[in-house]
Length: 345
Image (cartoon, helix red, strand yellow):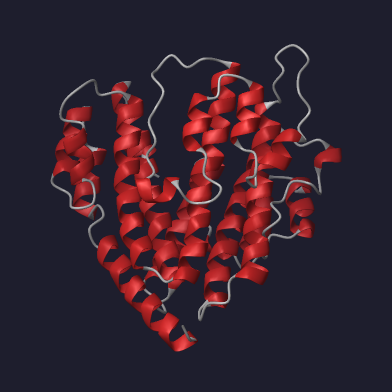
């Protein structure tokens, strides 16, 4: 297929994504969620919403646990993802497959947590649609069944996570690596593979716009890491090895300046001076993660309504997952009798 044909398909895909975005929570629905006093009130709002109606239906019977709620909203996200994926051309599908690999990354980390400390709540089920389970690099079922370090390593054999996982130093008593080191190594492997693909593997008609969107999100993850490290302190020897292998305007120089800044206000001023950092909200006093989410929400809404292309699909899927994460936070807050409003940022 020539570039004009791929461009036409990507425009149609972007149009479909914009239509799905219009079904997400309205300002009025968000206000009702902010004032909700129970999980049932939350479900009542979701049942009337186009994007989350199916999630509410899945939860009408059975125990309303954190795991079941999280899985229900995930299934809605992936249902939209599957519709877009089936409509995409082969080259666009190759890129979209990286999004499903992030689900694999989370599954590896979940398996490590389970081996280190068996969960009090039941294990979840596979939220990926059947279409994605047979794609190369996917091993969710094996990860869920892994009962030892050896089985975990066998599950990831042949995937992008095999090498970083095997390279981790393990504790002599537990036989497992430190979770913090695993997170760093596996995320670095994921973004390194994504960076290689964006540089040499993807040649679609909107390659620059898509790369800008992917790089922006990596920058926001780096900003969240840096601000969190400021809060908890970062050893001098760890500096220079903190940034993800995919980044844009948040360079190693900026990293060093942010970590050495005399105050968080000074650090944020440095970050806001970068191309990506200009989307950071002013006068923000929330967590580092909430700060990065706010910037991404502003940026990806702009991308969603900009030039149609695969970057619009990426923006929609990012915003869809952000809304799902917000609903998960709200659900947990309501279960503990807390006001949901502070957890919606």
